[in-house]
Every structure is written in structure tokens, then in C-alpha cells.
Amino acid sequence: MYSREERMRAIELYIKYDRCAADTVRELGYPSTKTLRKWYRAYLREQESGIPWKGYSRRRPKYSSEQKAKAIEYYLEHGRNISRTIRALGYPSRMTLRAWRDELAPASRRSRSGGFNERRSMEHKSEAVIALCSRRGSAEDVAREYGVSRQALYQWKNALLGKETPMEKDLDGDRDLLAERDALLSEVERVKRELYKMKLEVDVLKVTAKLIKKDPGVDPKELPNKEKRIVVDALRSEYSLKDLLAFLELARSSYFYHRKMGSLPDKYADLRDWIIRCFAENSGRYGYRRIHALLARAMIRVSEKVVRRIMREARLVVFAKRTRKYSSYQGEVCPAAPNLLERDFQADAPNTKWLTDITEFRIPAGKVYLSPIVDCFDGLLPSWTIGTVPNAELVNTMLDGAISTLKPGEHPLIHSDRGAHYRWDGWIARVKETGLTQSMSKKACTADNAACEGVFGTIKNELFYGRSWMGFSLEQFMDTLDEYLHWYNETRIKMSLGAMSPAEYRRSLGMAG
Image 1 (spheres, rainbow, N blue to C red):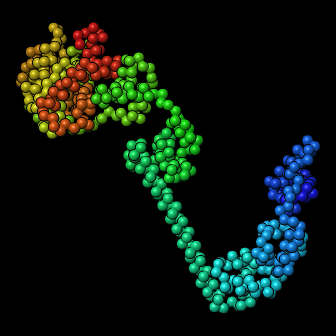
Image 2: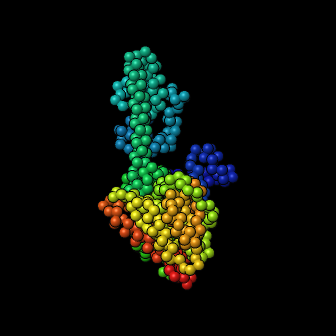
């Protein structure tokens, strides 16, 4: 506690030195720069208001003047040792006793030269050396007790006992052991920190896989901030928030923002339920574009991005798989028809361009083959046949069914690959009798019949893949496939048709569905 005179002296010098706190403290030796600026601000307030600063008032001293004098007297008469004085009297603190000494007996303060006190009494040095040689604690504790540095303590010992004493050799051994112990403790702390980091990383990966359903190999630092917040909340009881945010590279402000947003009610709760129900009703075959089209039909206005985000959060994913297609090519058994379609799969009217091919379905009970006709106008399937053998009867029956839907004057071009089914006499005869124009793809060129291949891919992704067919007989599977193809024509919406099914699209144009 500084008196008013001491404070005013410091403030006046501070003003004299153009408010340079460092120079003022360097010259006076007190107070700190922060305290000096605080005094100066209080001084200005006192000048403006005329009210004396209460900080100048001194508190009632903790110790009386008699106690102070007794402490300094004991200190001077008993070797000027602060520790000994405090142990004998039971007061005050080291800092307080030093302040009393500097105030009442400044000349008694011990001077040092290179850490070695030349003015110490021989008795005091001997006492310190004995304590050093017979100590139970460290040399630092003894040096601190006698108010000297460790270096000065050993200089006293060397001066009194010499350097080649057995005691010193033992001390050197102790010193080596202490250094080795410190190194081992440091290594233990380092290993503990590494184990802590590894455990944190493992726990973050476990939570990521369990709560967010991410692949175990995913990098948690690449997660969106919203998902990082979920991971942090799950582990806050085991790790500090600071460590979790640093590991996930998540800003503290971002964490608390997403935490606040997560506590708000979900404004898309009803929409989310509607989308999940609609996805299930269509057997998981509709992606976000067709789900959005169904919302528009129901007069629900919402952004397509919102639908996509909700489906991603609800993990509504349309299953997709690619496999090797069935091939019916058996060589050039007869001259192939030219490629008249030339990959132009657009048609201005129904029954002008037809596509056909055969695809195979393998289930535990056996193999099933589908042979459809695809109309390029809107993707409608005018006819199809399903069987267990890819023979001439399968394709010829399908062609007869498609021909029966033609109106007078309609003679579409029918395009296929170079499979053997489309080069047998029965197929060629039906094409010629009906006035159809035959067209064939180039050899091993799937792209020439890409539109038909796309229909097969859609059928298999929406119906066949991602589902167990164990326990289904061939007849049951064929019934399921036939039911799906009717749904494909009548109900399944296509975005290219304005979110209508092929049959609905034809009815909207005034054509028979």
C-alpha cells in the first residue's frame, strides 16, 4: 500500500516524462505501469470533480507498529534471515517482511555479487552448508530457506569442504538421478498428451459413424458445421469444448450458432413427413426432382433445394447399380439391317419410332427375360412379354402385341440390336407383312440403342436392385415385374413429360392412353 505522497510523486514524474510509464517505473522502482496509469486516471477525475480519490485513503494496518519493530529487531539479531524470522514469530509474509526491512532498515539488505554473498557471516554459511549436506529435500529448497541462490550455496560448500569430498560425489549422483527423473516425467507427460489426442480422435470417429451414419473412414474435419456440432455435443461430457473445437477445426461462434439453430422447432417437420411418406409409397424409386414435381401437383410451393436437403438428411436415396447386360448376339446369321435411326430418339408423334431389346433378371429361383417395345414419343411401353427362355416366341409374341395397337396408316420404324431374335425368319416376316421398317445398331455399340438401355436401367434400379428375391418363385417374380410395368405406363411420372406418366401425357394431348 503506497502513501499519497508516494503516489503523487509517481504521478508528477509520469506527467514530467510525457506520460511514459516505463521511464517512471524504471526511475522510482514502483509501481507497475498498469497501476501507474490507474493512479493517473484517478488523479484527473479528482481534478475535474474536486472530490478526493478514495483510493488514497489507507486501510487500517494488519500489524501494529510494535509488531513491525519486533519483527525487524529479530531479523537483524538472528542473521537477517527472513525464513528464520517468520518461523520464530509466526508472522508476517515474506513480502511484507521485506517491505518492513526496506522501510526501517534499508542498509541491512544483503548485497549480492554474481550470486555469491560476500557479507554473509561464517556461522550463517556453515549452517547453510550443513543443511545442504544433510538435507532431505532438494538444494533449491535449502537455498530458498537461507535466502540465497543455489549457485551461491554450492560455492559456500566448496569453500568450506573442498571439491573432492565424498559428499559432493554423492550429490553429483543425486543430481544425475534427479535429471533422469525429470526427463522421464517429461516423457510420461508427453505420452499422456499423445494418448489423449488419440483417444479423442477415436471417440470422434465412433460418434461420427454412430450418430451421423458416416463411413468410418471419413475425415471428421470435412463434415458440415451442423454435423460437427452434433459430434461436439455428444462428447462434451468427456472432453473440453476447447479441445473438441480445435480437433474438428470448428469456430466457437459457428458451434454456438448451430447449437442455437438446433434448439429451434423444425419448420419443415410436416413437409419432411410428407416427403418420407411419398418416397415410401413409390417404393423408393423417386429422386428429389420427381418428389418436387409431386409437391407441385399437391400445390405445395417449396424450393427444389429444400427437397433435396430434406431427402439427404432423411437418407432417402434411390438405389442404383450397374451390371453386365444380357447379350443375344450369335454371329452374323443373315445380313443386318442398316442403322436408320442414327441415335435420333426423338419422335413427334406416337408409333413412329419403336425400340426393342431383351434384358435378363437373375434371382435365386432362376432367370427371367423381359422383351418390351419402347415408343420414342413419350417412353410408353405399347407391348412386352416376360418369360424364362429368350427364344423366338418371346420376341414374336411381343411384336404381335405391339402391332395390334397400331392404327391404320401407322408403320413405325422398329430399331433393335443385332441379336439373333431379330434376324430369324418369324421376326423378319412379321416386319415385312405389317409394313414396318427395320433398323439395327452397329455391332457391339450400345449407344445406338441407348434409350432402350436407359429404360432397362430404370426398371432394374427401381424394382430389381437393392431387394432380396429369396423365396420368390419365377411366377411370382414375373407377376411383380408385370405389375411394375403397368405402373410404369400409368402412374410413374417423367420430368421430361411435365411430371406426368406416359398415359397421362397422351390423355392430356387428347390421345388414347
